[in-house]
Image (cartoon, helix red, strand yellow):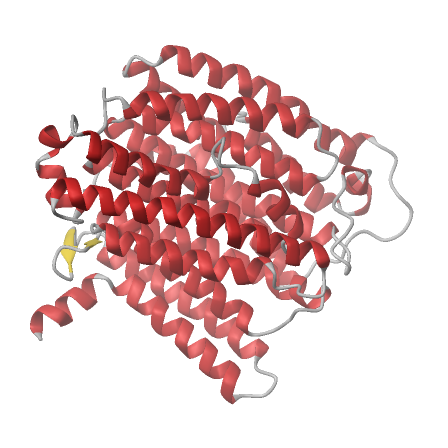
Length: 474
């Protein structure tokens, strides 16, 4: 009993979020007109769980018979997911009312998806990793089709579900093969005997299939075909949550399995990572140029950014681990802010996200135009914003580990991205303003956007603070 209590306390952020999601759904079931209650309870609960994650940070170890990591890495990633969930909920309150889907289950699904993300990023057993992946995915499948009267949303949910189920099959078969080769699904136990398994074809095949499942979730080429359609069709704030929280969770799990535990440095798997990184950067950046819809443009942009982070996975080592995590923190603030502004420009029919709708935005809503420009500059990688240091640390790690050629491709493709990101800025500031009022901006939505903007700026100005935390993750 004492051990169970200790394990529960050490995994307090995850347990607290589970309890919070249950409280929210009970409020929805028992109270009429419960949306304001659910909204504020969700935000207060998220704030409390962030404090719990900070409290558990020094408690590095494992819990529940070595199946879940505690403290350090698990606490930091929990904070990332909780911040993403909180900003999503704040930006969604006005948005789901505007598009006519203001149902309380939305908040519950976001919170349960966050629980899945935590399990995915902290699981030290492949079975727990799978449970986290599926819990997160099922919630996102429902959220993608939350606007059930919108044809594109139904199409997005169906595509995401069918392709996601197919990717899950690869993931499960990979776990089965790894178990067949090692006799265990525990990542830590397998890592202790990695030299014996690196040459085992059965183990390498299982690891490859495992990577396919992860590659689907991060949207890496050639497992990216769902990304533009799902991001465009889903409610905008759901797309924001997918592109930040879900991608961060998949990358955190990928880091935990392939870099920190299995350690494929200098193994044949690294060639696969490098090829996918190059393909993702090229396809994402080149195809994004042709997009007329900002949500589709950011979808292809997210594919490209998956390629940049895959450079860090390829390089391996502590520096790349810190670089990818830093990149994820920068990406969460940047993309949530950008999608949040798109949700404000969008109309009640979930239309109005084409580039032309951003013309003259500065003359109608100068504050959000300036914030959107900050997010675009961060995605480009302009110093001193967070996006610059995210790429910088990954490129430094790649060069130190002998992947200079990969860094050169990353820099060149980043130069390509300048065109389509700056195109949005030019339209907002230098094109003729449309007639009429600008988009409606709720007070809490403005606060969330300001938090995202300050996050992008402060993380860029004080990267050493984040890196100091990362030096004590394990």
